[in-house]
Length: 124
Ligand code: FES
Image (cartoon, rainbow, N blue to C red; front, side, top):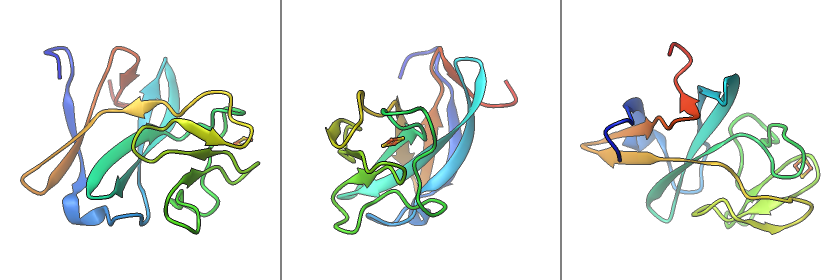
């Protein structure tokens, strides 16, 4: 984390269950309102912009559901693009790019997301 980043509390650690529902959050990305989502996979927490690498639309097929039935991949509900949970890399389907990663940290039972030059909280 650089000095220019700000850590913003997102949720309690127990809110993120391995391969379970995501925790959504609102951000300003490149000057527009967007949504992010945080997940837990193999014990680690990850977050991405909720924007498919095929067509820039939200991906969840039910609110906060991003994992496919196998629990191995994040899947876009619209045309079935799949992404690696650990990296957001496109692994199948029509995605042209990977997911846009949002840095997360987890400490003392709390998960924080981190701002970046093009990623800010809504009230910024
Ligand atoms: S919009 Fe996500 S796969 Fe097409």
